[in-house]
Image (tube, rainbow, N blue to C red):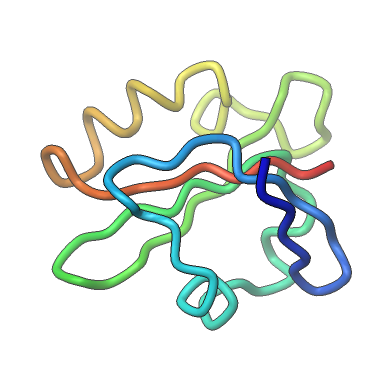
Length: 91
């Protein structure tokens, strides 16, 4: 597992599809807004990285729209078909 440090928060690379992980782009896009999420999905559309936070049910930010158990459905419904993407998990 690849260890990633963003703004003093440690993450691990949970999943990478089609070489979607780019640390430089992630570092440029990451803000403290994402600190409270358990997972961050990064997907590529038109050569631009988009980030979305997801939570486990015990997280105070949890709601159905960011339920981690539905991340595969989110990718299918909201990301470009067969796009590059990655998922990082907060340690």
